Length: 335
Image (tube, rainbow, N blue to C red; front, top):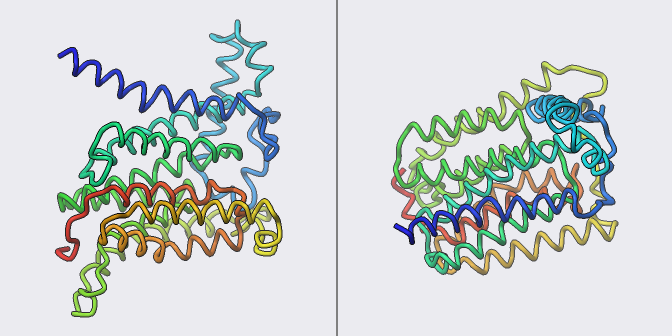
């Protein structure tokens, strides 16, 4: 009993306490030259214009969290008002609190995924915790460019990864329905939702079965694609404003001319290559390769309208690679 309690305490400290401390350091321990959100009293106007306007769930939560922090700072936490005012605005504190909650949930989900059908070195709990800690570090270092949508979107995406793996091992239809609903919801958060389709396709798509005329996997993927396209286009039809656009700008020239952006690209390539080398089983390497292939539309969008220096954009691919490298997949041609 004592050993079991110790394990629970150790798990709590490792999965929640340590990641949250690291996360707090990234928000309050040093100043980022990338953003000035720390000085904004209210959610900035740009969150409700251009491409950011379509991220309706994070924007709504940002307003609510800012109002909550105003209430707390001038009410229950009034004795800490000076301390909180020195270290940020109500909007910034609300941003941290909101992102910290979803970051913690991401850590919990990753812990559940890494314990699900593990293979390779992470069968050992100590090795698994090292891999988990590395995943947490990747999430933390990308917070030099804090946003109100990335952490929520990452939580939704990792939830989709978990549902896909559970569906792989149990074939319960309810999990498929939950995944479809999750993609609809997460499309209202950020376009990262499309990567859940890429992961599902990578796990289940079998080229040999396709050559034999078995198109059942296509029928499985179509509802996921519809679940993404309908809300994605629906938002852009319903939210017709002069300020809103499909993209913020085209940055392909800057991506291949700026040393910072080139550094971000090299970082992503090196990390993904390292993760690929961790795939010691042929099936895992195949799934990782298929995942990158099905993620090409997302990678093209990053190249065209994103900035490579914002390595947070590569984070879903990095975390997915870590999951694939150490997961024990069974044959997927039975779908």
